[in-house]
Image (tube, rainbow, N blue to C red):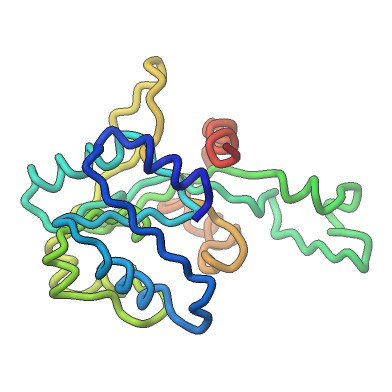
Length: 227
């Protein structure tokens, strides 16, 4: 797990935390669903929260999610509206090829400079029950009754099961923010490589009801994700 992800957990205002760090380097060929189940089984608490190593949680994330879980009576809560930081940016899908001298659109840039760029995007799912897998906070009982599928895209397959979808609640990671008081989004997820292959630039541009470019968050995301 990257140092920034561990630091984000250490800085949580909700302090009753047991951290289970799951090293996946020796599990080639295993799905993330399998890995989540193994990690969840190691946890001893009544509540289980996910914190992927390439995403960042605000210090108040767990405090607020635990309060929401208790107040709502749901068994799982998460964010259905949150920021994504794209580290494969620009207004085109880059076709960088070192043998050809670089991307034809970015021919005057080297690879290092190109990779440093980024864009902030806001994702909004209209279903009030939906939540991003990286933002799940669930009751252990729910996971024991419905373990994660040993298959790709395990988080959404899990959420789509009747037991989970009717017991899940999604909220905005940006609701109630007051920038004048230094308030910030509760989670940033990172788009990189092939880990999120279904949300290419073209997909985002073709789905404006779900995806919105938010350049006002560029500097915040870059500063936070590069700590």
